Length: 567
Ligand code: SRM
Ligand code: SF4
Image 1: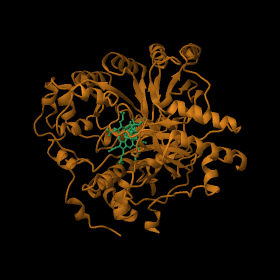
Image 2 (image 1 turned 30 degrees about the vertical axis):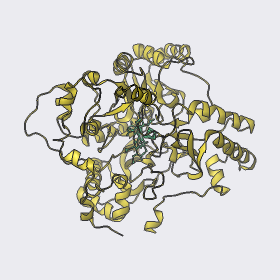
Image 3 (image 1 turned 90 degrees about the horizontal axis):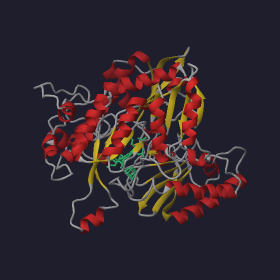
Image 4 (image 1 turned 90 degrees about the vertical axis):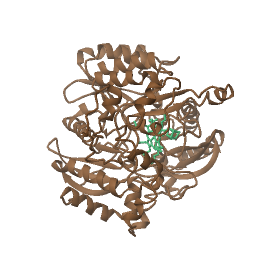
């Protein structure tokens, strides 16, 4: 049933007013920057700085103590860089590493599962500095947060074939094409003078999008980007080693709110096939349809999947066709058979080498087991090629010339970057959660490494330690760790307690189902012991854990929660 479009324009959310009154995202950010009495931003600026790629956070480990001492919370910003397709040069890496080491509270770099990096703990006084450094090295953080098109993902390993290179270039083109046009970013952070009456947002509009919007460009059969979780996806159709067009899928998203049945995870749906020359106009038409039709009265129902539910897929498709002046062709055949990253060495089409380094939860730091940050810095100092950040929080050292392979391998070994780890650990992922995430309900990044060790022990006990299970943890139901596309997914409920989901699949097109609610880590391990034991005994040949629990009806598969709506 189609809802009246006009109804959605009434009772706008607070965020809509903030955007409207922001003077194209300027707010009073510049004034706040001058006030060095506090480390925080004030009022609407807390939301507006997100459009510039920063989040105001405070260290939650210190919150209570500082409150008791009547001190201001330990405010600092997290900055998320824009890096479509995840490519960063050695030169850029060295600068970022240097800033992280000298100007952040945590001295780490955090790779995200959207092929970019975050710097946590930047004090307000250092913000202009990092933006200017980014600018000097050809990077920015524009549009990496809030209601815009976010960092565009593309299948990693672009040097593996010519098609990967093309795919990467499309990720860049789409990212640039959909960027905010406001000059607020360069005025505030790069001190460029305000040019009067040049502000205009031809695609995003004055109030930008109703909600965040996520895009991928992907080459089957590898679904390393987890495309089904994204709002807009371009699946490459290749002929004679060239991309000739894309299958377009829309409406994916994973976040839910505990106890709110009006929120649900959803897998992206097929719209149709387009020739390659139509890519940007179709991207624009999808984004502007979501801009105009998306719900601006309730942020929990504002993403594309809810717009599709409100209007129906057919009407959405017709509108996109009208705006782009095209007719979608039937979807061309495609399939996926893998996810994740292949850790280790690989040769590319040009005869060069790449080394994919496993990074636990994307955290680049030095510790007792591994000098990951120092090792990567050392490699960057001699490596002439690029680094590529993956959608699974790992890093690829790419385009290594044959004559440099040994040298880089020696560094990687001596700094502990090459290690033998289980497939379970290699494919596990968690979101950031405590101490920086303000929305965290339970630990994720800090609990995962030891938790994996315990699950490894269970798998060893039942003789399935060489098998791979995709296990992911998110500290709250926003689901940043993409737990709702895993075979075993934990979603934080409160400190030390999680909902346990099981039944996703390897290629990432099945949403797992809740198995146990609000249980402790100890209880989770008891359940996993039981389930893994049964899987090890009763599985069919090569049957994956997720497929087993569905076949045995331990949980019922969820295809798409609103599937019945249309059928
Ligand atoms: Fe996320 C909010 C971290 C990928 C769904 N996410 C946040 C914030 C910014 C918390 C906040 O709003 O204050 C987290 C910052 C924590 C910190 O201290 O760094 C945060 N999200 C992350 C990252 C770093 C997780 C990671 O460990 O890699 C990922 C950054 C990606 C990037 O580079 O842009 C990240 N977030 C995701 C994903 C997965 C994905 O995109 O593939 C999702 C689920 C997919 C989806 O969008 O449905 C996701 N994050 C959310 C949501 C729920 C959005 C919604 O639709 O309701 C929020 C909360 C919000 O936006 O209100 C959120
Ligand atoms: Fe924070 Fe929740 Fe996202 Fe984890 S899932 S990073 S706890 S918002």
